[in-house]
Length: 379
Ligand SMILES: NC(=O)C1=CN([C@@H]2O[C@H](COP(=O)(O)OP(=O)(O)OC[C@H]3O[C@@H](n4cnc5c(N)ncnc54)[C@H](O)[C@@H]3O)[C@@H](O)[C@H]2O)C=CC1
Ligand SMILES: O=C(O)C(=O)[C@H](O)COP(=O)(O)O
Image 1 (cartoon, rainbow, N blue to C red):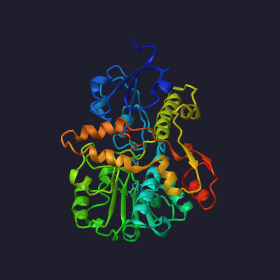
Image 2 (cartoon, rainbow, N blue to C red):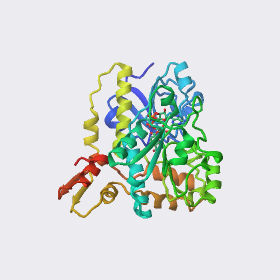
Image 3 (cartoon, rainbow, N blue to C red):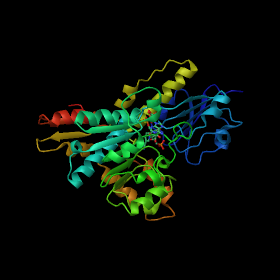
Image 4 (cartoon, rainbow, N blue to C red):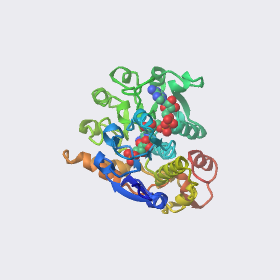
């Protein structure tokens, strides 16, 4: 006999679960990393994050009728199996795209300050111009940064304005990877590899906040051992939660797959699943995204005094160095490292998006006001 309330199994690291799904059913929280078929024997609805492979092994002979992943990426989901078994599905496209764009901007401003250059004197190459890449493009363009874009699937669909990957690698001073992990047309697995890493220009910055296996990590390590002039910023790792210790020692900034971890982005992800599930069930959603975000709390307050630079203000909201230091400390015990990786993610401090920051004090003058607005602050 079907229970009158839904049985919902959810990754314990999904925020706002009770707020959004509490009225729809009983929520059973489990570890996403170790979730198994036996956890789902009563489940009608399954809510996951990126660390749970959702496939036949997990779902066969369970009553699950709808799967939601509170993530942009879907490489952990066997979409064909879900479709063939008439199981409803939703991801959360774009939910944390602003967070990733802000992660990139914070990191680039950090490296620019350290190495004494201006972003406006550099060419930034964006590989993968979807929700994340496009938002990064828009913000950098407004800052006056020169861009090169690479996105073969969009180009094949008739969109204009792209360059081929080898040209981008040869010409860009800063390379940002934002492709999904795909294996079909235009596969992105090992998109950067031993052969084309050689094209990267001296003193470049290479940042990956897409998926780890988009760069062949073994090739990256070998290549970088002879190319220490290139600054590496890695948020994602080929075999995470296991991180290649030697590669981690080569990076300027290393983080445990948290580029998208703004509280805003995470709540938006859960809300998008709530909305999609309501639609699937023919229920009218009663909770708005704005209500949920208003309950997020902990808004950053920044008192402007006329002395701060764009970098100071951006870093008052998000400074990647702290994440990097925690990440490096998590590598010390090699055996416990994968567990520490997940712990850092589970206990990630509240990080808000730039738009949530409240600026008070001296009104910023041009050009700072324009720069703040370009990167996403409400000025
Ligand atoms: N580090 C993190 O915390 C996060 C990582 N991600 C990753 O970033 C990826 C991108 O996110 P979105 O921009 O929102 O996805 P999206 O689906 O909106 O855009 C992806 C873009 O990449 C392009 N693309 C696909 N294959 C390509 C290839 N071989 N070469 C160049 N471009 C290619 C697509 O045409 C599309 O325009 C996600 O799939 C996810 O894997 C997303 C959010 C957070
Ligand atoms: O949205 C995506 O795609 C991501 O990569 C997420 O930010 C990853 O977060 P988890 O789902 O692994 O918590």
